[in-house]
Image 1: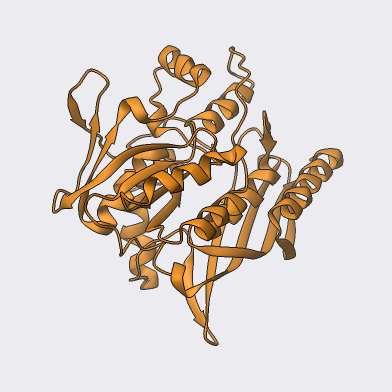
Image 2: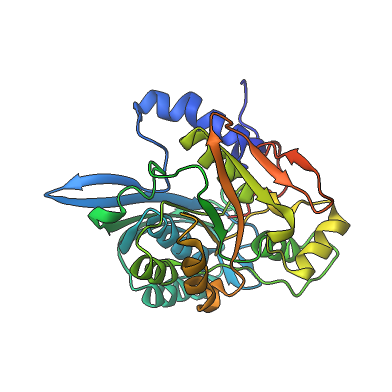
Length: 334
């Protein structure tokens, strides 16, 4: 490639090509690419993650860039089987940013951290000239602790043929909430972002059904991107059923009007879990008992090894291959 394009930030095929072709190769990162690195430390296993947030606009229905930063970091730790504990936060501020906006964002971060049971313990602040940044960008890192029995979750090494896929709720709310908030768009919608910390929900599941084999939060690139990552990690095929995938009526209607596919839209409060067929009913019950998982559903299953593709069983009764996301639908969604 000659130049970086917006496509390289889509979370899909181009993003993975950039990461594999440059970053992991140059940094010698040979471990499976999970949402958080698992690091041994004095007999304990630490989870460590980092992320940046450049969402446009910084305020949107259901949240803001600050809540997004805390939730995204907490969720990356939680889906790796860790109990989130500490967060760092770095701010790049543009000259002219309203202090009241910054205060509102930092206040929401503090409130979200308290709800999640984590502490923001360190950080950094830089200010750049007007026009050199779009209001503010936030970079976070997070640390959590992984119990021995959960260390396999991030790498999917225990996933087997016949295992069931469970999605914790409706797709696409975050992407369309941000889209609706962008000034250049003419439509309005009551859809709100699903931005939420999932660690308490995930801990409920792990306490009741510790046999979870894999988890991943469904963010940039949407559900299809996560399914392709899982297929690549396991070398197995995946079958999902269109009529079982939860999508809210408002999101479904807007997608039909705008030409979007909800399976590829970003979310900030949804998790995909893989469990054995025997554990699926009990896991689903635990998820549905919590507000954040009330719309959870079993959406598919793991196929035999060697298939290495993602297949959609359509509402019309046919089947088609779901290609990994390419191009860009909504830039700067997180």
